[in-house]
Image (cartoon, rainbow, N blue to C red; front, top):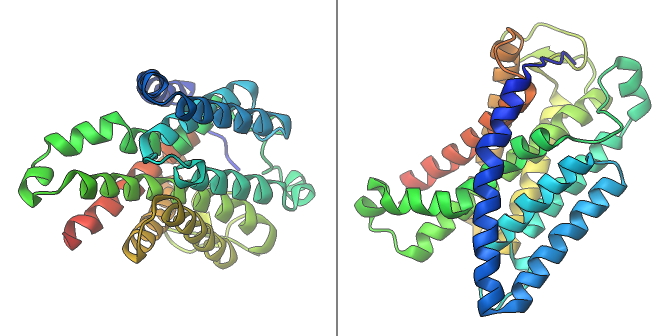
Length: 295
C-alpha cells in the first residue's frame, strides 16, 4: 500500500477533532458529575477501559488509545439517554467498529506482511483514530447540535428536538459504519479478494494499491457497515429507517474513500488520514441527505 506522508494533514485532522471533542467531553462530564455522578463515572471508566484494552492488544499506540478514549467518552455523553444504560449509547457501535477492525487487521497477517500491506504492529496512531472516529463525535456532539439547530433545515422542516437528535445519531452512525466498512473491505479484500481492480477504470492492480477494490472486499465492507448500523439501531432504539440510512451512508462513504484513494491520494495530494476523515464526513452528509429527502 502506497503511504503518502504529508504529516501536516494528519496534524490538521487532530487539530480539527481533538480540541473540540475534548472540550465538549469535559463540559458534559462536569455537568453529569454534578447532576448524576454515576453517569460520569461509568462513561469515563468505560472509555478508559476500552483504551487500555486497545493499547494492550496493540490495536493502537498509547497516544492513539488516549485519543480513542476521549472520542469514545464524548460519544457516550452525546448519545446517552435517561435512565442511563451503557449499552444504549454510542459505546455499542464503537465497540463493533473496534472489534471488526481488530479481527480483520489480524486476519491473514502473514500474507499481508509478505505483500508489504500489513498495519504497523504498534497499532493505529492518534491521527488515524481521529480520522476514523472524529466525525461521528463532531456530528453527534455540541458542534452538530448547534449546526442543525441554527440551520435552515431545522427551521424549515420544523424538526422537533427529539427528531433532530435522531438525525444526528443516524449521521454519526453512518460515519462509524464507514470507518468499519473501509477497514474491513481493505483488510479482508487483501486476504480473500483475489486480483483487485481500480475503482476508476477496473484495471487489475497489485493488492494494497490505493483505490483498488475487489468483490470479496466490497461485500465484506457492506457486511461490516450493516453490522455497525445494526449495533447502532440497538443502542439508540432506532427503527428500520435508521439502519438502512446509516448502512447506505457507510457504504457510500467507503466507496468514496476508494475513489479518493484512486485519484487524489495516488496523486500525492491527500494522505490516508485526510482520505479517511473526508470519507466519514461524506458518509454522515449522505445519511443526512437521505433523511432530508425522507422528511
